[in-house]
Every structure is written in C-alpha cells, then in structure tokens.
Amino acid sequence: MTVHATAVALDGRAVLLLGPSGAGKSDLALRLIDRGWRLIADDRVVLVRHGDALWGSAPAPIAGLIEVRDVGIVAEAALTGATVALAIDLAARPARLPEPSVWTFDDVAVPLIALSAHEESAPLKVERALQAHGAAVKAVVPAHPASPAPPILIVSGMSGAGKSSTLKALEDMDYEAVDNLPLGLVDALFNSAQGGDGPPRPLAFGIDARTRSFDAEALVARLRSLRAEGVDIRLLYLDCSHEELTRRFSETRRRHPLALDRPAADGIDLERSLTAPLRRWADMVIDTTGLSVADLRRRIAERLGHSTEGSLTVTIESFGFAGGLPRDADLVFDMRFLANPHWDVALRPLTGEDPAVAAYVAADPAFAPAVDRIADLLLTLLPGYGREGKAYLTIAVGCTGGRHRSVAVARELHTRLLAAGHAPLLVHRDLASTGNDAAILTAAPVSEQGKAT
Image (cartoon, rainbow, N blue to C red; front, side, top):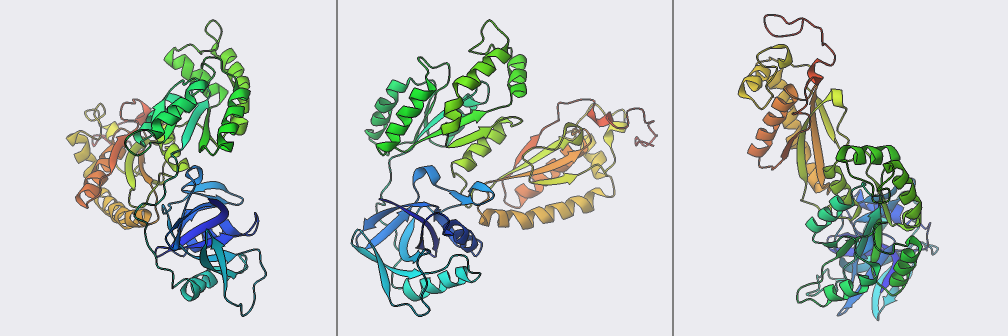
C-alpha cells in the first residue's frame, strides 16, 4: 500500500516523515540528506510487510526524485528501500516529555514521535529519536522484496523534438521500447510483458500525431483510466522551439508529417495545437531546444532517477569559445593563455591530436604547471562527486577555435585520469571546424616563432 509520507534512511533504517502537504516533509528530508542520510521516497512511500518488519520503497514514477520548494522536482541519488524503524508525525503537537507511542501498519507497530519540522534542531532531533526509539528495530533486507509492476512510459510531443533518440536512450535503460504503438494495443503489450518467464521489464512507447486515429483528448482519458486501475503509467512530452524545429526539418530535408505539401512551419503549428492536451497532462516535459543527443540522454536519466552512487560518468570535452560554451559543462578551463599553434603556418591545418601540435602546446612554459594543478584538482573532486551520487560530470577545456590548444590539453588530462584509475570519455566538439582560431586576430601578422605579435 502507498502512504502519504516521505522516507529517508541512515545505516539501513528508514524514518517515515508523516504529515499533510506543507508540513515540511521534503524540507526536513533535504536537511537530513545534507547530513548524510539517503532518500528513499518523497511524498509517497510503498510499504510492504515482511515478517515483523515494514519495508519502505518509492513508487516507480517518483523514484530518485524530491520536491524542492521554490526550485522544483530535482533528481536525488536514492536507496531502493529500507526497513522502517521510526515514524515521525510532523502535524501533531510535540510533547516536551512524550509518552511512548506507536504507528501501526498491517499489524506492524513502529515507534512514533511528534516533531516540528521547521525547528533549526529538527534534523538533530530525528537522529536522536532514531537512536532512542528505533534502535530495537533491526535493519534487514527482505529475501524477496516486493517489486511493483514495471512502469509504462509514453513518449510523445513534437515531431523533430527527439522522440526516436529518447526511445533509444530508454532501451539502454532496459525499457522495452515500441514506436508509434496504436492506443488499442497498450493493454495487450502490457499484459504480455507481465506474463514473460523473466522479471517484467518497464515499457516505453512512442505516440504522436502520426499515429492512426490520433486523438489527444481520448489518449488522456485512457491514460487516466489506466492510472485509476493501478497501472503505473507516465507521460513524457518532448517540446522544442518553433525556430529550432524549422531549422531541423530544413537541415535534414525531411517533410513534416502534418505538412507534406506545405511549409514545415504550418505542420509545426498544427501539431502543437493537436498535442496541447498531452503537454498539459504530461508528468515530465523536456525542452530539447539546443540539446545534443548526449544532453538529452543525460536529461532523461536524471528525470527517471537513474543517477546512482558510484556510477559517475566523466566526459572531458574540448571546445572553442568562438562556438560558445558547452551547454552541459560542469567545470570549464580556459586554455587561451597558451601559445596558439594557429599562427604557425605549418601547424595550422593540424589539430591537437597531432604530435607536432601537442608538442608545440606542451613547450609553453605555462603548460606543465597549469595542467599539473588542473589534474590534481580533478583527482580531488571526482571522488567527492561520486560520493554525492552525481551521475555525469562534463569537464570542458576551451581555446579560441577548439582545434589545437584545448584538444591537446584535453588529451593530456584524459591520459592522466586514465592513469589514476578513472575511465573518462574524451570528446572534441569543434575538431572538424575551421576558421574559428582566427575569429579574433584574423589579420594579425605572424612572427618567426609562429606566435601572434
């Protein structure tokens, strides 16, 4: 059964934070997480009895997510479940010296106390209460913890906004993905997945205005009825700006499916109107304007709570400032203080992947101390990011055009992190571009040493 509560855990034992909306459940959970606790579920908790203990976990739609007031729904590294050792009522009036009390669920009694969530000392009181009242509850892991039915995820939205890329990303997350599935086959597909020999897989299917007999209002009504029947079903809507969609259809020379004999702009306007009910009803909306496929995959993983501790994916990306900062950059290092190989006529056609260019950049007296300090900083930061449950870290290394200095430095940092036991990805965003190195100093003369004067 699902109860209205938030659950956080410490050392394998969970505390249920009970109370109505506005009682401070999520706020207190955030402060506990900041002290080293782990999120289990925010706002709703699935409770299952195992012997004399209760096992708490998150409903699939909100796993790995927490509501931060004034910020929004954000991803948070979470445990899959824990034994409930204590319940805290945030709505009741706290007593200075309370009598022992219990909260009962499915004939299992859990120690209960009342606290005020908004007191500055509330996190400390929760920890003391767990020690005093929940110590007798043994933290155990059920041999067969109850697994809810896998979720169904509907992927819809604007044509050209990335539905195919999203479905491919979901396949990599072990979803069974089907594109353009007629609505009438949803039940059959769901039932067949439940009846397989192995564990059931989560389902994802794409549906948009191209689908036969598409009716957004009817689709919303059907989804609501399935949810009322207990089916875990969510809708992901992919949006994109009108200008970006027009550009994508123009560059790929694809015709918009709703404007085969008219300008793509007409089809975009029509589709936005047809799918408006889906966007209003959607559980998640991702605007893909300006997102690369890699950005989109990361965004989906974050929204679905697939960020887990110990799975930090590090990307070292070289880029040119002339093309703008990478949108997903977490750390940015500017290499424009180093000697620029662009001004050496023999090196200009080459890139930082070529030994001659790498040697030229490394010969700058500032290169070695700078790279040493950056590498030391990264080796200090990476373990901390991993402990905090960050899933992806992009280290952006930039120069003017993104072909010489940034590429050579990114390659050197990649080598050093590999030697230290990490497995970073190496990406060169602007390696194939030309002309950007001279974006600022196009007419500058070239000295005998090959540097701009």
